[in-house]
Image (cartoon, rainbow, N blue to C red; front, side, top):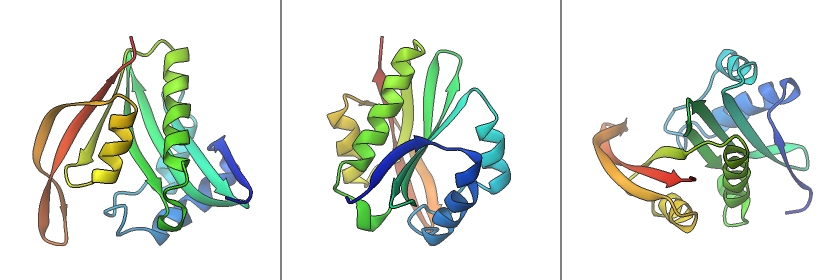
Length: 154
């Protein structure tokens, strides 16, 4: 990690984030945000998108939405070459700190049941599994279950 920066998404980074997602369509299971969605989210006080830049190139992002007194993580992704460097942990910690500041009660997410690395990240941050969605993810003509996870903040 040479020149790593963490920041909130702003208009100057929208096109870079769209391109970043396109470069990792398969890894993101084709679940990407369009430019229009990113701009809409940016203009909403209920959405947060945190970006990690390495020498001004996006290498990771986390997108979440506040709904009443809870927050839902929609996407947390780190490019393969930037993994195992603490980036996902930092993005998650930034979200958790923001939620605590806003007096959010819980953070929810779903993660592919077989994604051990992601689940371990969440377990290290005290998330608990509270349910399962069978055959929730579908790609390459295969279906995968999702683990539903929750972090109690209050």
